[in-house]
Length: 319
Image (tube, rainbow, N blue to C red; front, side, top):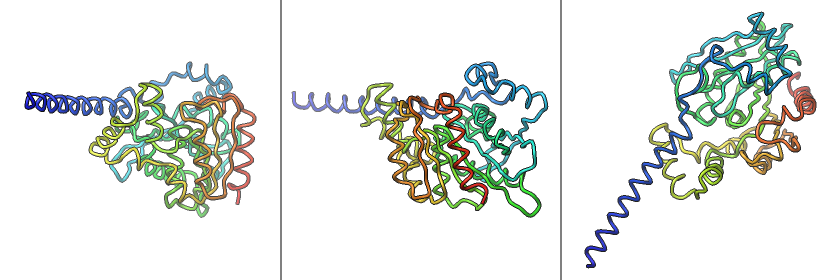
């Protein structure tokens, strides 16, 4: 009888382990697979974008009619093919805004912010992150390994827009996962022409964000699935959810950063911005968009958003 109980318990343990591993594979695919990454401009739903950002219609019609939205590919050290759009300013300038899109979006999803910078007289560069848009790969790197690709994009921007003996001045501006990417870049040794950063509703770490979504979407605690899925991510992609930490990167970040977050954001919970802001050494600024949900701060407060960004840039981009 005792032996039968032991065998039954062992069988149940093995079945539980198999189930956990199977669900971990599913969760990794659910979180990091982007098989429907949509490609380039030919697959872009312009009408849906304009419905959400009606102020962009006339500007979009103009840049598309005049072939002002250009693109190219950058080959990175990791042998990735990084797709990049760029838009020249109406007048020659060394000012550049490098805009980084969010989770399962692509560079074209940042065109409303591109318009904002274009109206300020900036050149604009918009990369498709790994596994998004027309860039190579079909897995999402959550802004962690993307930090090197964005530095490649910045080097491209500098080579594209600098004068013969004068480098550019570049601001990196990201929303959601793009904001996490920008914060991860800020903790690295960055070239002098990257002057400052704007992060809009980024998360503290991939672990914290996936923990939130595991609870919100599946009503599950972090143990054991978050642990096993993170370990599987390490085996498959070479990084863990814990090491992918904008919060930790910010402790090494010494260039100016503007933090933006909507106080009605529950997808990337609003309190995260205070943790991030506290971790970042000065110089830094914080603007809270009252009543805005995730990624909606610009849509809800266009004039205020633009004004806060413009004042911030005036302090750091023209030195």
